[in-house]
Length: 359
Image 1 (cartoon, helix red, strand yellow):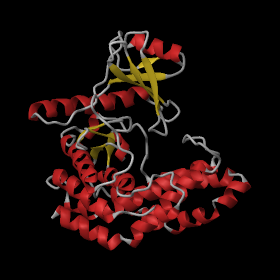
Image 2 (cartoon, rainbow, N blue to C red; image 1 turned 45 degrees about the vertical axis):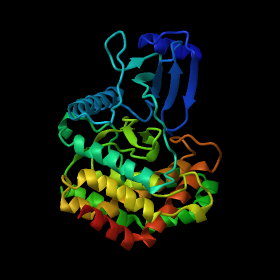
Image 3 (cartoon, rainbow, N blue to C red; image 1 turned 60 degrees about the horizontal axis):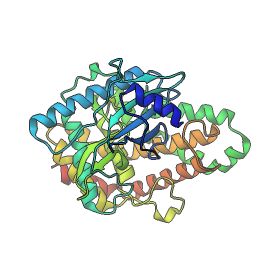
């Protein structure tokens, strides 16, 4: 791999031999490396998963549109927020293809950290502000200028069809292990299709959304102030509900999505109020009343979708997500459906908090 990375570095003008190479483990999909030159300048090198991203040029195009747009706004407003900066190759391209893989490179943002779990409301509030700022400042990008790189990415019926197809070919031992979760999915299908039905009737505006708005895709400074949204692979047109819901899913619980102690998996209303406050601070001037009304359903829907995706991958013998052991995806699915049940149990409080913060 070092030899291959040397080739990538040469293509993007990064000087070799490298001082160090570090594998970053934050994502399920792409392979990401932190490389350091001899002069200590650092870069993030990413191999795009071409099995997941069929049109890598469109993925890169979306990322560049958003990155340059945010950079211009932050410069004009003297914001302390930063946007990801992408490097070009010697051939003036933002993407490099070797014999089989596609690569892109980003400047490393110094004096920044990622946080895996929100331990305090202050961290959740900063995350809400930053993801809200992303929605606010990308509003002026025309959705027509960007590609839907992952078709039906957050569409429940598409995910349910994948699930049904997986049921048909799943091995008997996996069907037996997942029996309770399969029943849970089927029982809640109708309610979890509500947003999709409203979207089909054009009840919500299409916005530029991040589509992987989890806590680890935010950079903080050493004072735990949010400074940047990173990992723009999935930016594309979508509904605000799924960015909001995905953030709540990952930020407003003190457990990770790999936690197997179910007693630790629950929605934290203090963290939710803090996140919602930050998000509302940035977005309540642009969101429609109907968008705001359905934000709590967005939380439920995205957790359902993520649980469904983990369960489907388990039934498909783990072909999509990276796993560390045989039942990893099954445990992730159980984790998400446990969190969803906690949201159901606290729905009235979630709706009350949402209404208060957006008033």
